[in-house]
Amino acid sequence: MHSVYLRRAAALVLALTLAACGGGPGAVANDPAGSVQAAMTAVSSGGFAKMAEFTCAAKKNDLAGAFGGGNLGALEAAGVKADDIFNAMSVSFSNISAKEVSKTDTAAKVHVTADMKMTVDQEKFKTILKTMMAAQGQPVDDATINAAMSAMATSLSQTQKVDEEIDVVNEGGKWLICDS
Image (cartoon, rainbow, N blue to C red):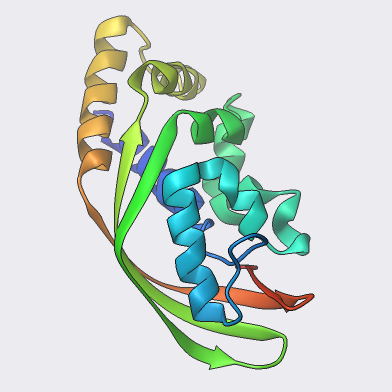
């Protein structure tokens, strides 16, 4: 019954997580693939807050919108803020492999594979889920929210395979994610 909402939330979380797969200040490598790998490691240890450090200037002010697409717009219209989602979740990557697919002086494409595991702070995320479901006219009683939250947390906590191509740009000698 709530599988549509769980899939939307899971898709948004995955999109937001993939946003972190770029290079940025601090631990930026001199090559696109190294930057992607460094970014994933930084996000694993520093959380979603690290995303801004690994994002190109064109996307920095709208991280969630740039990477969440239409799903985020619908959630924001329902009163859910991207920052609340970021603060209610953590992600870790393992078995990271980043390989340069193409490169010019200013842009590159990096193919990345990894194992990703997400952890949800259930108490924080219950508020988000309740807001989202209320906006859709769904029941928001504790039993319904707890059942949906439990299913979502179980699903997200399972290791997900990441297999994506990431667009990276060179800004001032630093390779930064700039996915469109």
